[in-house]
Image 1 (cartoon, rainbow, N blue to C red):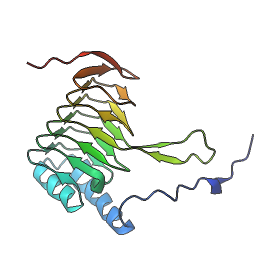
Image 2: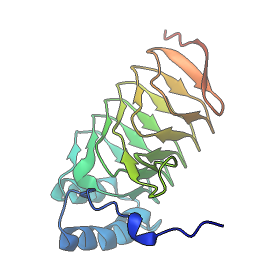
Image 3: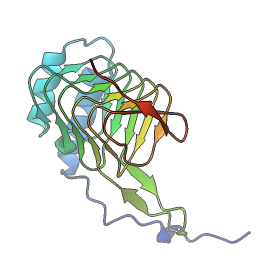
Image 4: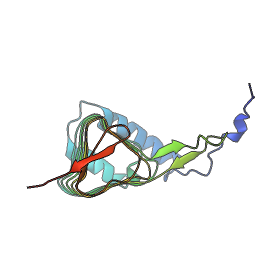
Length: 183
């Protein structure tokens, strides 16, 4: 078995967008007010997100047990909804448009690792979710993906590529199954 030089596992070019102190303060606020299921107040969560640099429009609902890595990389459009146990692991920008629904237990993951390199370098990619998109419960959206206008990701699907507007996607990997008709 080949011995791996751990010194090569250096992702020092990654910058989390804030000082160590700001990240530490956010860590505890996230635990106390977001991940904690005893805090049902969306308004308080929105005030806290904005105070840490998030852009949050009116009418947003954030349910209990939500985990947000870095609010300074987060933008949420008006009347959007984030369900229980959603994890937004945003090592870089995540943008949710207006009237977006992120259902329970969904994961938005902007980070990955380059498995082709021995150093397993960190790779990050933005996630953009356009207006009217519904991400089903327990779905996974990976970095570098754009979910286009009014697309639907069914429950437990995994999306690692851009979707087309007004289409429904299902499975792992998610496949386009039919056009979304809106009355």
